[in-house]
Length: 266
Image (cartoon, rainbow, N blue to C red; front, top):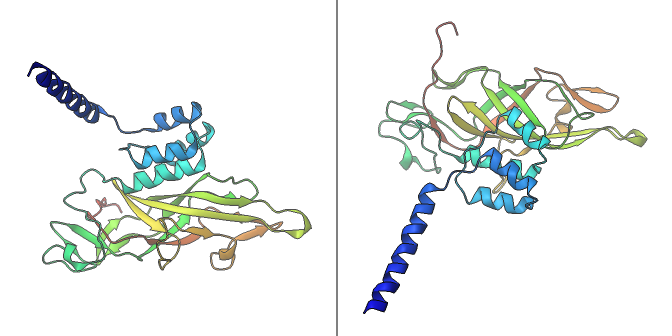
């Protein structure tokens, strides 16, 4: 009997210890990723840790630059961007609900493309997101993994309600960059769209209007292909894009967002 009680105490102690560890486990941060990189962890292992852990990443443009400088691999930064985009934002529970494509998630009294007091405003998957480049970029100097900032070129509305005001920032990363080479070979420049910042929320965006099977968030946009439509200027066969050049993105999934708070001066 005493042995049985001893074994039970050991089991109970182990369960309590495991519970305590799970409760005190802190979300992964940029510092954790940098530390794992400096310790020589393989990129695939870091990505796995990101995918299976809670996280609190800073994925601003400057933070991405700092990560790249610290030697963090591009697949790891992409996993961090995905984790940040998928993370529920503060204050969204009552105003936002990711739609599964079924109308059953629409709040009573609300219809697709309308606003509801209890849920906010629903933006449909495939909605146009007019962006423009926040800064100039060139295939001659760009490198894979570089952050690319965009600015929303017009208010994003649902009906007459503004959900994301003009001037909001969006983030992408360079996914392919090759400067012009020998034998008249032209430069290449592609970007992968990630998300549009909507207050405290992240609105996932992609580069193609229609979905291609299970295409991942932020479908790559080949700027070389878009030379004509978005009016790029080509100098010496490199791809040079001036600040303010327009680029159309698309909402990646149905999502509820609270109306934007817009000042009277706007």
